[in-house]
Length: 87
Image (cartoon, rainbow, N blue to C red; front, side, top):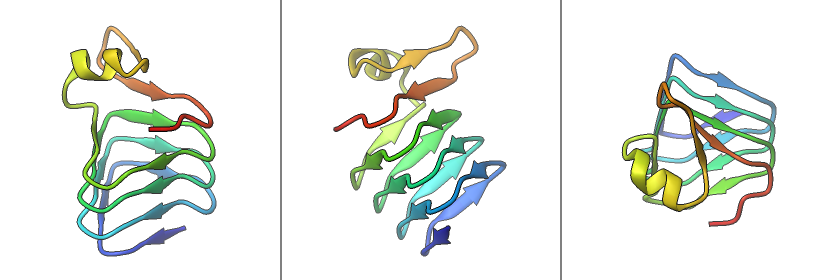
């Protein structure tokens, strides 16, 4: 796992996770081989294996937008990004 200039708070990261510069990951669970692009912001998100989050992506801040993308959003506001999701 490599945190390359990003910030990770209160989160669990699997093997091979990479967070790129200026990214912010808060209260998340990132499974193996997830990549978080530069300037992305994830808040209360569970990301399954092998997902690449593109630069500048926000997840967990706007539940309506997350639901439109096809993500599961729980009643408590946790967003789930499924395995192999392509943005």
